[in-house]
View 1: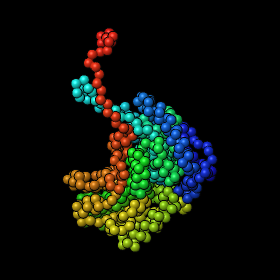
View 2: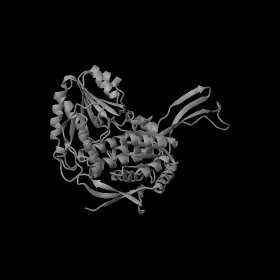
View 3: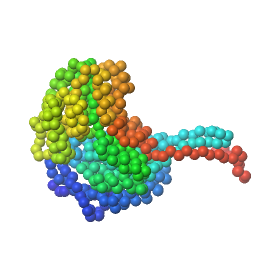
View 4: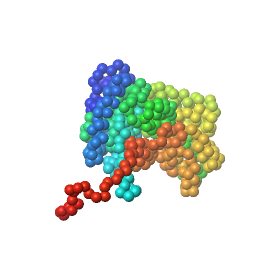
Length: 496
């Protein structure tokens, strides 16, 4: 198997310079090195930003008709090639092909949303605010935008940002995860193929050095990111200190509350799919199932049975329901929580180390803990792996208090047949995204995605209406014109 070389994409083409540093890109299903990715230094970041600056000067003046033409063409390319992109994601991330295709489809929805950018950029107009005076607002692009995106959704998260930014007239520099970098390059190449001018969308690869170079660059106007809470906090504090607008989405510890009246079969199936899908490596994964009242034993038995029967294998195998973790280091870190949970007093109902998995590869089977309490590290930490927890409470109020006491507030879900309980839950819960009988409440493209508390640093969420606001600046114009026409100008226009 040949080793691929993955490099930056700047000014409409791959960079062919000899790199000073590179990183390894793995095939997680085989546990082998599949490629090397070039790491950008500050000079390479300067080069990408300079290309974006030059392109912005022209692109910001492009007509809305030109932008929509490019976006519609890009939508058609993504639609036609979505399985090719999904295969690249599966090869470098490890998630099943079905999960990867779903990721591409969710990103495609954002592209479709911003195909309506002429409507989304409309301002407001107030006539005659004073005699002969009108006031109106216009939305203008902010400049060069940067994005720092995570390994767990190498196509979807960039598609949350880049299409919105360029539709608003900005240029963009993307720094994708070095663990699975190829999807970012494909997104940029296909955008150019769709007619986006060279330099409007650039990709640089690397580690912390490349990120910090973007965060502090004087020509970068805004930074968007998705990652763990420590990473989000660092990005927010650093970029904001350098005068940039920032949206930095952080970590999660998502709870799913199951009331006694819920359909336990449906709830168990939803929890297993939401907890173990993509090997638990997603910020919207269900981490904690909160059982209310006397149904806990029944629900845990259903969860144990479904967990035991989950098929783990390579992502490109049709029978696989869960793939490997992204690296061996991450697998080992997740595995360490299994011993920690037992030592802290939780019941290990299903041990992923005993689950049947392929070899070699970065595999760890799904694990299930019962009787988890808030002081345990498995509850406090964002494990980001296939480890599902069950916490037992006596009342609905106890469940709400448990969730509202958690510093993370990305997403939550409630399973019930009681409409009154559901309405009270959505009103009282202090979480950014809420599902009612929906285990992963990811908003559609015309709403916005984002959590509360330590799950978001910044004011505006990604895509949807918040995305349009983030990638534009509002300018207010107040104008007065003479009441009478200028000399020599006739207002008598011919008909026809």
